Image (cartoon, rainbow, N blue to C red; front, side, top):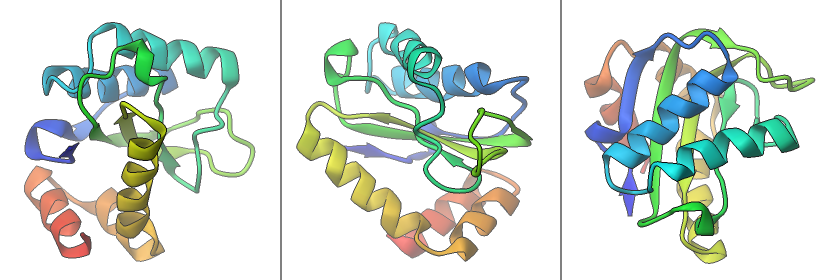
Length: 146
């Protein structure tokens, strides 16, 4: 599993909207060879068709698509937004942290979500990630909590 390694993190991305943020999260997954490029479009299509259901808690989005949309290897990326972006979620907007997910099966999807939950289960961890200045700080926060 490729989980939030240096290549999978963008510490200061300036997105103009939710789709641009999702595209960046998917591009990191594709560049790390976790997904095929078509998966990026599938993530955006899922957002357009299903809305912001993946904005699971305040400030945090977990966009993804189905395994058959081009997942090669279980992987998770992180895009820390320079400025928060509205995803259209009634209670959890605006989003500052976008975790792109690629899983090859339901079991893998659950495993990824468990790892992310361990990382983000305290508000303090979310705040630390949002306030991190660079990739090295983000990696330290992840290592401390996983």
